[in-house]
Length: 405
Image 1 (cartoon, rainbow, N blue to C red):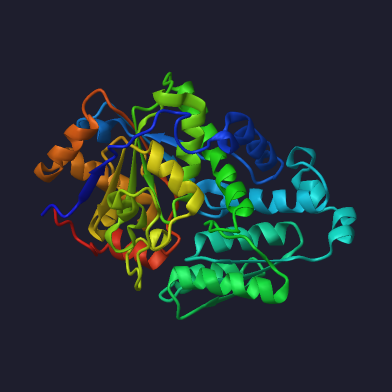
Image 2 (image 1 turned 30 degrees about the vertical axis):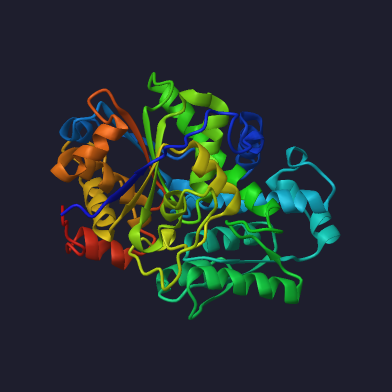
């Protein structure tokens, strides 16, 4: 059954003719990576080649960047949160981020000057854990709000970093509003990975932090003799990560950037619906946002990243939850001889989608539109590991959310 929705971008812009990209230029990305490198826990995450899976699917090469190794936190989000907090602290000190390091920001000198700051955010788990970890590492405090239905294991992981955290009875976007209100009432600093009018600096810094991932991937592909992948699939919740990575690649490569497709769950497909509306404006998705892909369960686009995705993404796909479940199972056991990747529900959806497009009749029209064939080099990013262990076992071991392809 094909209930995957594809929308080709008929208004694709050339690099420089669309949304502003200067803040994601290679120099800015290098500045973010230099800050990340000042953390003892920093190391590039693996780029895993899956040649046997590529052959099975009928594409030239498949690479998966495995973010489950990121700073020991099992997800990529810390790239954005740590950099945004670092830039905020640097500005409070009257310094450029290039002048400070992790060790300097946690020094007694800086602590005495700034005191203890409380950072707050709303999260389904990964971003909140990243904020809590970064605040703890730098000697500050965090208060985290989670939407209803959040996994208690993710809550426990956040609390393990010393944060005050709770699961609310709100959906994600309303939890964001709660965090924002509490920040204003208490003098806290909100570190949210989405943007709205009047709140843009910190979301911009978060997107710059995600550009580190793009820098690493390009260097790793270069070591394989590949200048650029032909195709890139990026998951989107509010779109910050997708916009950060696509914006960096467009700023770096111009019109030679890969054919890029934005992927979302049906129940929270605010980027797809915004593109479908065709008026250039971001559009919201309301309700409970009830999807297996908890990390993508966001109903309101980041107003900064939306413009990048609107102008430079080649297409948008909205898909059901079983696609993500298939991706988890495929990455856990790709093909004999390939390296397994432990990928959570939001991390694996792009792999499940690639398999559907290449292996099933229902994907033929889309793969032709995207020119996916034996010459394609596909880059996927597994944005999280098994951050919800029970969900991971239920799907990979016990077959929950069976394929409907």
